[in-house]
Amino acid sequence: MSLADRVGRSLFVALAVGLGWGIRGDFGHLLGAMYPGAALGLGLAYVSGQRSLFLWMPILGALGALGIGSGGTMSYGILHGYAQSDTFINYAYGFLTLFLQGSAWGTFGGALIGLVLERTPMRTGQWLGLIGSALAGGWFVSYLVVNVCGFDINPPRNNSSIAFMGAALGQMAWLAFNDKPLGLRGAVLGYVGFGLGMAGGRLLGNVANVLQDTTGYTINHWNVMETSCGFIGG
Image: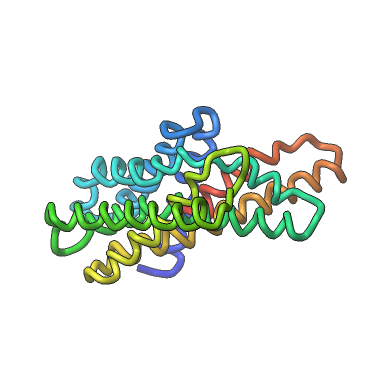
C-alpha cells in the first residue's frame, strides 16, 4: 500500500469521525457521543479493504460507539471557557485539561477495537480483569485527586472526567502487562489522537473567534471545535 493510499484512507476515517462529532453536538451526552465512536469503527473496517473486517463491521462500529460513547457523561464546557481566557494560567489549564479529557474520551474505543483484532480472542476472565483494572484506576485517581487533595476540575460541574482519566491509566496498564499489543496500540492512538483533537479543536475554535472579529463574518467557533476534534481524533 502506497503512502498516498494510506493517507487517503486515514483522511476518510478522519472525515467520518469529524462528521460524527459534528452530529453529536445536536444530541449531546451518551447518545450523541456514540456517533463519532460508531463512525470510527465503521470507517476503519471500510478502508481496511479486508473481507474479514467487512464482516466484523457492525461489531467494530458497536464497540467504537460503546467505548467513546461512555465519555458523554463527562462535562467539558467550562474547560473550553478556561481555554479562551485572557490570562496565561487559565489558558494553560484549559488546554491541559482538555487534552487529558479528550484522551480519556478516545482511548476506550481505540482499545476495544484493537482487542477485537488481536490474534488470540479475549477470554471472559480477561475481560473482567480489564474492566476491573479500569474501574479500580478510576476509583483510585478520583479518590486521590478529589477526596484527598480536594481538587475539583471544573466546579460547579461534576468530576467524572477525573475518574475517566484514572480509568484510562488502569486500562493501559492492564493491556501492557497482559501482552495485548493491538489493544494497547489502539488505546494509545485513541489517547493521543483524541487528546490532540480536543485541545487542537479548541485552538482552531479560538482562531475562528479571531477571524470573526477581524473579518466580520459569523463563524460558529463551537462547530469548528467539534468537527476539528473528531477529524484530528479520527
